Image (cartoon, rainbow, N blue to C red; front, side, top):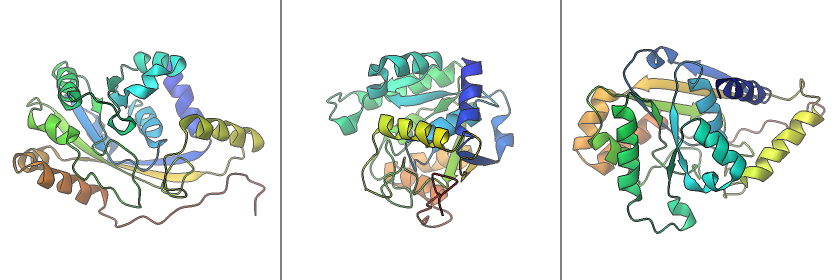
Length: 244
């Protein structure tokens, strides 16, 4: 599976020029909980593939994707943690408890976990976690030796994978196959690059203080980190090198 991840990272690199800041925090033997903002459907793919260069990580993924045979095989291969999709109308009232139990168990076993606090892609040029509880619930019971790492991703607001143009989540497979066609149409090596910045920051001590003050304070703390640079403007990058 490691070879597959490397190949996939190379393929993503045909379209996305990724810059990483703070990668030194990925070192060390303590388990890590990564908490990123969520600009577009493609950012988990980009983030996972780049974190995997330095350390293994288990992403928390909505169970909807596990129902697709090929994706299920891939997700099982990378040890993804399935959770109910509340946005799809799931009536699993125990979903938060399952997220907490699965994530905490992984961290106790010295595994790294990638969890999106908002649970969905943003609807504007800044992150809003609102009343979501998953990250807060996990951090309230997090193992003592876990490092909490906030991840700020920018550059994808305006991507065809984001809600910037239509206000709605794009179809995963339509966007995926459109991406493949774009690469082919650009003769593979001439695909215009979208600049993506990923910043890692250890927030362990502060996060543990904020979580005690309640969900609202904790979520606001995360939002302040994600939105430090203000509202991001829509970034349009041409799809074809022959466009003017």
